[in-house]
Length: 118
Image (cartoon, rainbow, N blue to C red; front, side, top):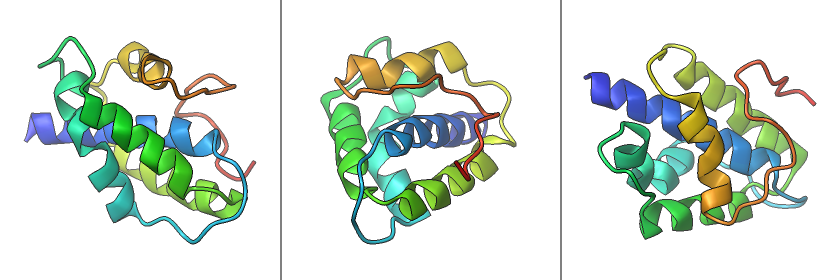
């Protein structure tokens, strides 16, 4: 159960970062798509792996490509913050560094206080 909570928080934060960095124009992204894309990141997020898997990085890049419009990014941000808000045990430093390790550019700090409406 705790691993599931940690995984949810990591998925939420990592996806939030990827989505906020995405460009414009695409269909809506669902919370299910976010979770599926980032599921391979769970071992890294929970400290069971010291390195990010290729599947995790592929998921981040795929999610980045899916979330193109501002509306998509805002909706996913709200979904992810809702999921992550209930979990306090994830290392935000680990989460914050994951996109860069996967070659995904994030032009802002990762934070649960980010306003999803901007």
